[in-house]
Image 1 (cartoon, one colour):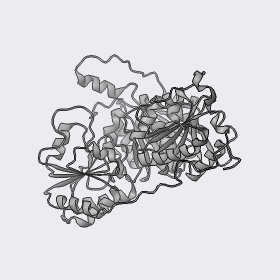
Image 2 (cartoon, one colour):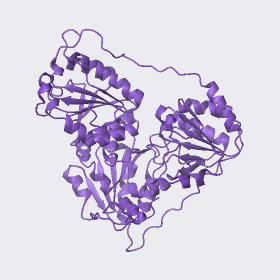
Image 3 (cartoon, rainbow, N blue to C red):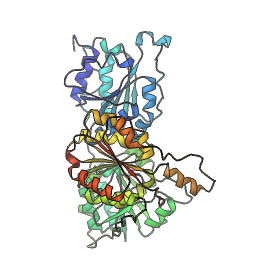
Image 4 (cartoon, helix red, strand yellow):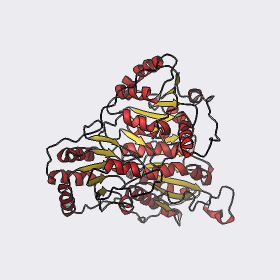
Length: 534
């Protein structure tokens, strides 16, 4: 690296790890890094750091490898905190380079000097602050490896004067490649198959960690041999099983009593690629019915360590399920999945549109390989009931629960998978948390479709307040907000829909060509609040 600057060496590192797209919202601490980028380095601007990280998260999930993010010092990193939490919970690998004031006078705490230690808590899988400018390229290489291994964001803090310093001639403290050896699974699979074969009525719970073609195929084989129903984990970031398969039983409820009711007739439950078990409201009692044995297979050690499983196996879900499907005895019976759901009848004259009307039309018109990004909390259960994920990466949601993920993530997913149809189903309140992302979609001609379920308020909070029994909610509705008008102001084409006939017309025109769209479109749909949540 003789004669190269640290900046030059970092570009080489980025090329080596195929991180040649930079997602950023820069400030002055990035001015020594970004101007004059090489022609093979792409730059993608978003107007808020939450959108930056959301877009990068979608891109990383689409590509299956780390995305490169550049953030301004304190304000930039702090603004991105919620999005970084979502990236961590969604297992999205990110390399996040955060700018810092000039190293030469940091001791004086100049203007924009960042107190960055712990600013985003424990959400990064690793944080590095290189001791010398020469250590920056290796720190970014290490961040790549940490992001892959830890399945989340890894942060490197780089003072602004480091970029122009001479690169080190010697090798840095990071390997060029990290490869994982695979331990023999035979003994573990034999143990699992023995327990499963003794079960009278096994069941399967699949989660986001099973969302790939190999695991889907292996789980289908396993479910069919066992005649076992397959449940999707509650609040999962992705679909772990084809939801149009006859064995699919639906989404697991998030509360303990309902989980016990669902699993009460099963003596063995296999949890694949998911926590055992994720929940939302606190309820007294055990998660698992008495007498039920839980076997868990996950590639993530933290899911295994924080688990109610009787046996947790840390291993590749696809290979484990493939071997298990070969070893278990075939039951020769078909699992009873969930019963078919009748389509919602069109609204009568004068009646409002409801989420079910929208979702039935989406289910009928969306191509099978559509990537659907969900961030509509009050209508999520209705979406789950009516719009199945039919291919891997067919469903993406924010597992951390924070708002602002869905809109920019859909943009990043379409950037990473331009040949696939991408649609985001958003609440009107949810969309406002990441609305700046529409400018990026319009500027970079990203052909994602944004469906906004406009009920004019925080419907999910209204329902929760009603159930709390504590009195009237203090927050107002916001029926005067028109997301379609905001979208147009950001350069994104938008349509407002308030009748069933108009909805049928618009979706009939848009959905058939969704895969080939080269520009974004937002459809702002007036719907009545869904009162059936949960």
